[in-house]
Image (cartoon, rainbow, N blue to C red; front, side, top):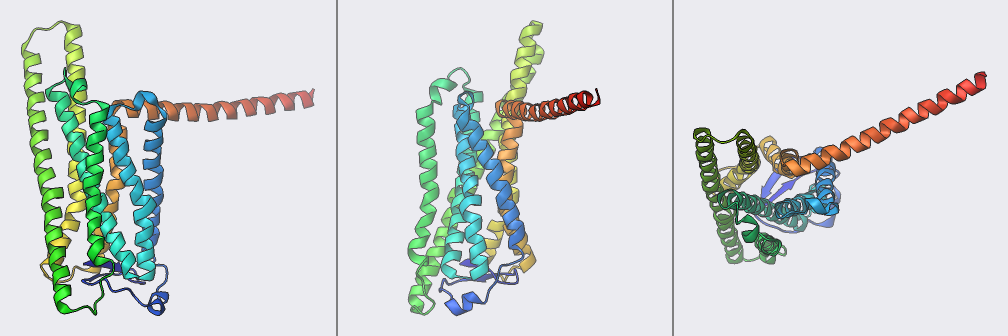
Length: 340
């Protein structure tokens, strides 16, 4: 099943991937609805590229948890670098092979995103449950191994191209029925393996972490600790709660932005009628929002990244201000000398 956007900006659904003739493709122009998508692309590339550069260029930020965030930023960066250009070309030319690649690529990014959020939640769970053993359990080699598995599992979505890229509507009906059956099986597998199971795992871990933090807060309130110890414990509690709430927020936004897309897919798979074009377009835009919200949330809510961004912004703006002040001072001196 392929989602295509015609030259008027309307989205249609096709159950075949027959390449469009060149003469037909030439009739389509640049869709006006591609302009907002290109705006999304600029923001996605700038924000995620900044996060990758920030973590990669500062050795103090290359912690295990930030490596996971950088890997997620790479996934979101690919949406702007590869996914959106292919989507725009598909919308402009209506070449079905490009639309197949676009659909498959966004499936890959959806799986990659949810797996990264799951890894981040597991990382925070280990940090809160076994704080003293965290550095022994979560070391860099293990994190890189887990991220390698994450990318490999996400790339398995590209297997769909093996039977859909060269599919022709003129093939025998039996072959088309087989292809449709494969599509249905793969779709159900993706929904269960890359949406339902991670969703349940993250809900369980988030609830357990919140309950543990609540229990620790009650214990701290009951015990008579010195003021210094009390402040330290409360500070740690606040930081851990921020970590957990960040994971919860990423999960909620992922569901908010991707659940309508999955519901639309289920409706199309069960042939429950065609979804209105305006709704489909809105769902497509929602799907792109995760690539902007992810880096913004963890950059603004993670203490070390937020502190570094503030420091860079302060240095940049103060440098510009000093440069302007110095220029005005020089101009004033020059005018004074001319007057004298």
